[in-house]
Image (cartoon, rainbow, N blue to C red; front, side):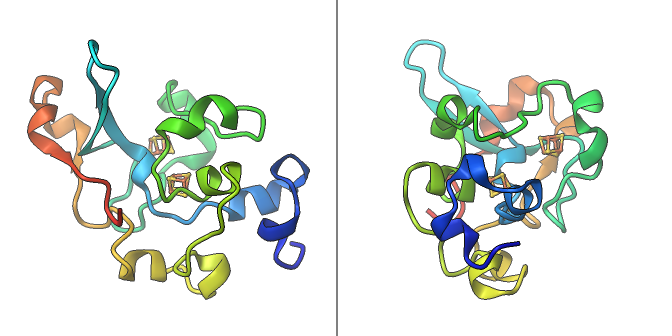
Length: 148
Ligand code: SF4
Ligand code: SF4
């Protein structure tokens, strides 16, 4: 990976390796959201996708996730314009798309993949799996986005 690529390489010119390395491992994009049909307001819940590992905050089947969870969103430089607005506020892809810098706790800055957890940004240990909670009860699990 090129030195400080996140600061100087446009997203569409990043290599696949650089693109993947942008993910901070917070896991917040793997939580289910509820959208108010009337207002369009989106609320975050702590009900997690069935494939999320609540400790590593990573997808348990990343390579084949689209087969198992067809509506999982695959981020690409091309799709950012459409999806950035509903990604977590601290998501590295959203930050760069909006021209903002990465936070100190991002592993590319800190050099340590644990800092995203230590800083209270990730969803480690706070989720419930979606197969344990009926969808009509998800509103009981609404949370504020961790770290914001
Ligand atoms: S919200 Fe962004 S940075 Fe966090 S896990 Fe999802 S894609 Fe990665
Ligand atoms: S399939 Fe994997 S990457 Fe997609 S939302 Fe679920 S846990 Fe996250």
